Image 1 (spheres, helix red, strand yellow):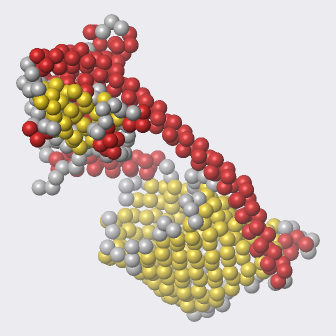
Image 2 (spheres, one colour; image 1 turned 90 degrees about the horizontal axis):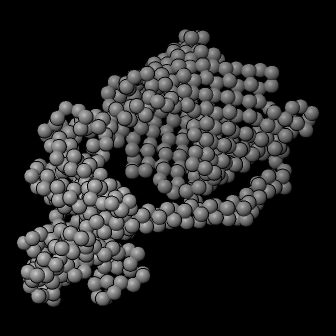
Image 3 (cartoon, one colour; image 1 turned 90 degrees about the vertical axis):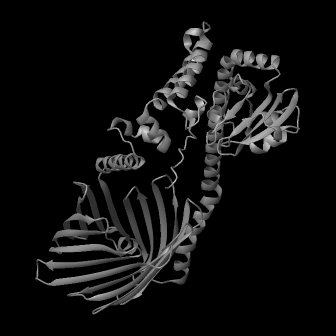
Amino acid sequence: MAPEPEPEDGRELYALLHLSPESSDEEIRRAYRQYAQIYHPDKYQDPQMKDVATENFQRIRDAYEILSDENKRQIYDIYGMEGLNSGLELGPKLNKPEEIKRQLEELRRRKEEEKFFVHARSTGSVVTNFSVPQYLDGDSIMKGMGMSSEVQLPISKLNTVTVGGNLVVNGTAGTGAASVVLRHQLSSVSSIDLMATVGLRSLIGVQTFRQISPNSTATSGLSLSLRDGSINLSNGWTRQLSENAVGNIQLVLGTESNISVGWQKKDEKCSAAGEVKVGTNSFGASAHYTHHFSSKSHGRVAGRVGSMALDFEIGGGRRISEFSTVRMLYNIGIQGVSWRFELNRAGQKLVIPVLLSTDFNALFVTGAFAIPSTLYFLLQTYVVKPYYLKREKQKTLEKMDSLSTQLTEARQAAKKAQRLLEPVSNRKKNKQLENDGLVIMKALYGDRKKIKESSELSDIDDNVASQVLDVTIPLNFLVTEAGHLKLHEGIKKSGIMGFYDPCPGDPKLLLVEYMYHGQQYKVIADDYGALLIPQDIHQF
């Protein structure tokens, strides 16, 4: 039988009541009554102490309500608070972990579907062509403009409609088209698309997709032109060549038959692609390479050669916000020398190609590349980089301040919880002293390295104190009348009443020095490890 997953909260509810995950219902009730006597708000007259008691009493009451309910406890044991917050406890009572897991996955799917249906996915682009030579000849600087937009609308769990359109204007002439695609998910590995387009190229068609193996997919399509009745057939195959690389082959049979072979590779640092296409009326090859210098900036090199194109492109871009990227590219080809500016934001794209010259003057070609490159690097070095460094530094400082504030508040809450435990803890300690029993002399919980350092020192200096908490009071409180202390396996110790996590994300230890029958003992336990004292092996 596979082991059950460990909840991410470290079983904090068990830690709060000092219980083992195997505790009986009676042990849970007994632990709750013990803590309720300490933290009940009616016991305190001082307003501050009453507030502290109220907050901690609410915590232990919430823990008790969950652990005393068989169904809720089973869900918490397997999935922690995530399972409870997902609404599993609101459904029918489930007795098997498999049933709980199945319903939790169903609830997760429902939430994903709700998010999916709330927002329609929209993409679009606007291209505005500018021509400096045309402007110098006395015509308008704008050569043409094109727009395209596409909206994906889920209409059910298995069906999605995509509606799109485009409009292109060149001078006084313009063309446009509109399309609609209905996609039906046949299974988890296959789908079918029904499509129709009206406008410049009016056609209807169907295309199927199928994953034929874990690393291979195939598509097949059939389209009929409504203008001349011609039929086009297409077949494509895609194969995962490696972890980061994909290869594909596309075959089209019809009025413009062609075959193309392509390759793409993408990882954290770079992406590259290449394609060779041979047709009955044309041929061509293209490739591009993009290198990510950092999480914000990248450079790009691309080229095309063939019967219809011959150009080379180089440039780069930068992410200016979470959803926005700008890019500038320099292009030289058979049409001339041009710049292209791009703005991408959340699926929307603005592209501005600017034709600078149709002449290939060496000085002009060099200057058109060197001037913007120089301006970019100067701007990057003296304006953008200092600004981002300053902003990142500010963000880091804000995060540190926020974390410091949270840790300070958590430490204060732990100290306040200890103040409520202290009277009972001292009574237990005095009784153990009278009986020559178990007395916790010093207990420290925190950063692994600091704990090991402090185990050799009698006093804790300021450098250690910030990452270590004195937990002598709560551990004396947990000592039983028989003179024993047990911390359970798999229970994160920061959840114990009077504890907190002084160094989130770092490994932690618990150091305990104690007296038993007049002898001194010392032990160090892992954060999730069990601890049972007294034991002879702890004597020093």
